Image (cartoon, rainbow, N blue to C red):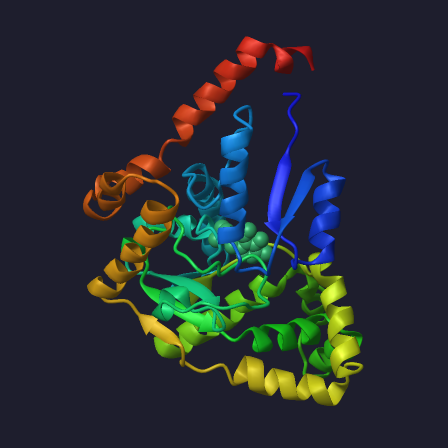
Length: 340
Ligand SMILES: Cc1ncc(COP(=O)(O)O)c(C=O)c1O
């Protein structure tokens, strides 16, 4: 379309992320702070909105296109996986998603329609437990936990919140990616092929696994219960984090691997897990007020509609067919597709 793409993200996010954005041709603006400093991004967006009227801002935290994608694309893919792995008596017990912009968790809305008894679990960092207890803070699980509730988070349909210690995530991330860690896992009898694939999990993917363990323990699940989750990115984005940890803590050893597996994986308990009541859900929804009405100039009626109007989420999440038509119309009009 001949436009310039600009990505805005906090300056302390991993080096690899900046390199990747530059590689795909985006201009990058780095705002102050770490992963959870999203208010600084919003401030930059307001600056652009006021001074560059020719710019269009796509804010993943308030665009329904974001959960809509996961509802229409991620969720059917997850369902396919579930149907292919489940035992004859198997049931879908939960869907776990670490939330940043709350797009990915939107897949849960689709899954719950098909499997109404399942739980939708939102996961965040213990160092920034906004959904768990209005908490705030910096943390190392890049991509999640941004000190506010996204506009597009369907709080009314969220059943459980878990907060995962970022130290556990970093230790398991080393276990899964350091040579000595992988050797140790294989010596425990874990399938070598599986061990070699653990690099497909980024730090938030590890958080999802730890959250799934908490959920399984809390609900006393058995081998018939299936928990679905996903890896939003892979270890490819965090090689520099491994280097930093080696510099800080020394070379990774098999003794460290044994400690990490026992403490952070097997030792994952049901602490920092909350099963949400009706009013817990409403409290999460109400937090949106301070970001979206007070700071970001959204309409109070729209906020209330997101809680009160049962049909509004289905309506928002099921727009994909119309959008596909509009994309086709657009392509028809420009003639670009035909010329390719
Ligand atoms: C690495 C990583 N994990 C998790 C998430 C959270 O996904 P969502 O923003 O859809 O809630 C993101 C979002 O960008 C991410 O980059």
